[in-house]
Amino acid sequence: MLKRPEVEVRFSFLRKGLIMNAEICKAISNKSIAKFNYHGETRIVEPHCHGMSSKGNEVLRGYQTGGGSVSGNPSPWRLFKVNDISSLEITNNNFDGPRTDYNPNDKNMVNICCCL
Image 1 (spheres, rainbow, N blue to C red):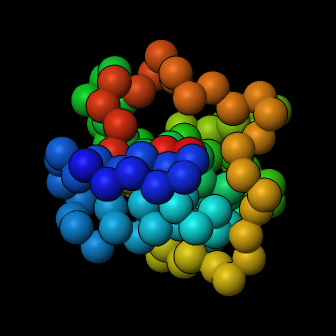
Image 2: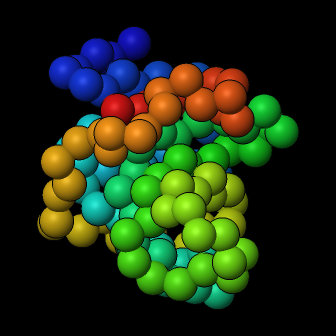
């Protein structure tokens, strides 16, 4: 287990592949804004946590700051299925750290790979 200030990384599972997992965890560790396509929409996201959902899906918990949405959900907090993410780009832009309303004990995630 690798520990850094504010970030814990665990590579206990790999579904989509090492590259996607490493890129997501690197973005979380560096507090880098991520840009990707999801369900036909470009998303701009502050990634906060990556792991397994309680439904058995590999997921990314993030705060969406830009881009589109098909769900119509007004909350900027999103749980993205990693298998549905494409064209992942880790930008050179950073965010300050965890949002004040971030819940590191997310009940929808049961196995954490990396998080703030």
